[in-house]
Structure formats: structure tokens, C-alpha cells
Length: 168
Image (cartoon, rainbow, N blue to C red; front, side, top):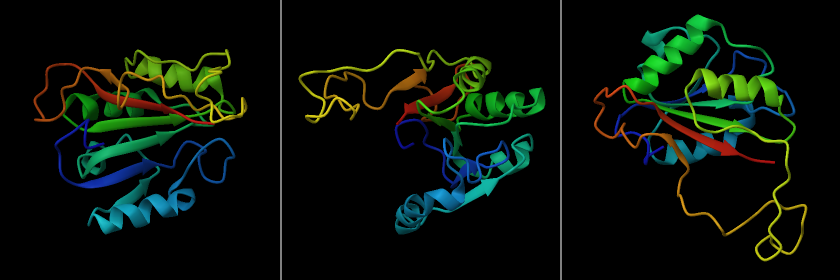
């Protein structure tokens, strides 16, 4: 998040699209360790179930959107796009168990250059010794930033400040 935005404020998490207690999603309840980490940095962590409210979004420096099990309304997608264009970071988390079509639809609606593919990740030389652990050291971008690297100063150049994290 530090790499995506210079904005101050709390970290938000979307919980209004079926993330609560869904196996493939993360809600604030599921992210207690992350919350404790943020508390150590004197940063709040709040779940919102209605992301269409820009007033709520502007409180945050970043919003975590984990794999939704319900579709976003157009007003919610528009609010997330405006938030990213205004300098807020949108971090999308998804894994293999997520509804690929729904997550890819969300990423498309946010103008991201990332999608969840159907293929498997294989890396015989850097897979932590087990092919079921999708770990590799062969990554050139850290962190994977989608769109532009704008966001640090809050200027609106029309690009999104969006990161995607795919986990299993």
C-alpha cells in the first residue's frame, strides 16, 4: 500500500459482496493479524459493506477488495474507479478457488491489466521444493502495480492506482 499511495488514513476492507465467512474471500474478521499489524503502525482498519459511498472511501488510504461472491453494482464500481483516480490504492486479493469470472469482471471494470488465468504456475527451480506451493523467486516487479505508478502525490492523471495479489 505504501508503494501505491502517499495518502494518509485508515485501511478499508470491502465486506459487502459475500466476503464474510466465504472460503475464497477475506473479511475484516478473517484479517485479525493484519489488523494487529496496522494497529502497530497506528493505522485503523475498518470494514465497509457499502463501497458506493465516496464519503466513506475518502477516509482511507487504501481499500482491500477480496474475491467477491456477489457482483458489484455500477455505482460501486464507479466509486472504486474515482477513488483510485483520486490517489487511493485499491488492492484486489483473489485465489484459485475464487469465482474467476466475477474477479476478472471486477478487474476489467477497474481497468486493470491483470486477470486470473486457468493455467497452473509451475517453477521447478523455485517452488519451495513442493509443486503444490506456488512460490517463485522469478518476479521482476515488486509489488505488482497495475495501471500507472501515480498515486503517490494524489494528483488525478486518469490512471488507476491498483494492485493485484493472487494467492492460493
